[in-house]
Image (cartoon, rainbow, N blue to C red):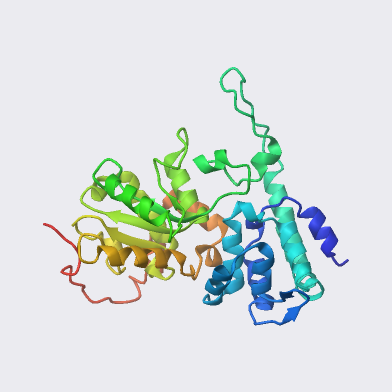
Length: 352
């Protein structure tokens, strides 16, 4: 029996957009990526969808530059809780741009499958219990908790909307001088004209959680990229070393630009990053040029996304084994199948 748009709207009510997996997003893109035509008030392609969602003219121009614009529209929508990124709203917006007969009909079974899987995963979330004598704040309801995959950041607690996503996870050692650079970077990139959203450990994560597990979860599922702040202090941090190895496992051979090295002070490039181009903030003459470069790489499409070619089980396995250099890791980076020329370290800001 066919699934109607009204059924999807009913069953997808308040289901966050991130419940839709890549198979749905790819199929939506096959319909909406080609340039369409105006039906009623809106274009019947990704541009019309973006306009109905609430994106402005400049946002839509940016989407036009992407290789997979529909996927970018859906991703950016999911990061903006004020635009109500839910599955039922997606169906309503597709109806508004006149794509109910083809897009919804063809994608209905995949959307229904993802809705059912999301509900099954969240059906056993327990009621949050709080002693009112400890805090006068409101107690989140089960429905509020279910809107989030995991409550692990300050922003998760502060907002009652959908799970928040970040442009980058910042890997650094807070015990050294890197903290000063990370503060400067946050001031620059999280303010106009860049308006990035960074996840910075020891600023955005919640105390009392399993640090390594939370880092792996954030890097794999909620942060598009990782910025690795390199310095002599970085090399002394076990936590930063784990985070770097895990992020590198998600982007073997740097094929998705997942890991972006950033030199805050002169140091030796870690061997795992020798083949990756970097951003050098140790050269005063290049400093002003590097903020736009850093912003641009955070905005460019993540292609391929690790979730395109890795299952949830494989991502979970990486969380447990990211600290080890496995045979699979060697194969994935091409070390066992390809000979790479030696690279000089002269072009890196190395100091002793």
